[in-house]
Image (cartoon, rainbow, N blue to C red):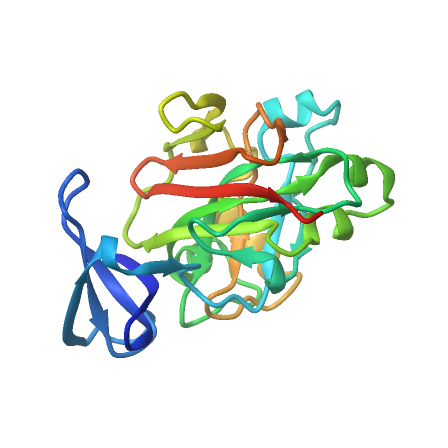
Length: 264
């Protein structure tokens, strides 16, 4: 299933996205959060008539650094011997079509296209691989937007990774997906008909796979329902400028698009 959170005339709801790509998609409202048993309310809208939000509330977003060897190499870093994790604040999360806002403190902001893991109702605390797999509700797309100059200058990454709008998530959560070998693609440009491919990678090239990451993080901190783990980005990260649009696609999930604007 594809679960989304959306704004409609009556307020904000969760729903199930119905239909095949290339057709007129609809969204059917459910009466609770996606983790509960799915109960449809009978209300349904054309997807084009609603506004999608970030698909879940996250108490925390955990990022994973240098989880693709080619990305570690392009930044001149070694591949870590164990997962390199950091936190992004919940206030950095935005949804599809929301603007990435370039802060005046940074002279170089870059995109990082990533597969994102969503933790389910059971949460996870000190779980093994099997427990990690059981704790996963589904998957979505994330963009670990990073102020690269600040990442290099600061002794830790909180500022570089934590600005408001630096964590686009969406467009929805897909359940039951095999993520062992999916293509991740990022395109950036100002003309939607002439976007430039910046990143292409495959999830099979992760240094640490998804169950390993979930288990590792759960031995550091309790993962709560809705928490998100960003699984790292492939090579090709590049500078974003005002007027750009970032389009990230992950095979089997869909597309996450966000415009880029200046805070000044």
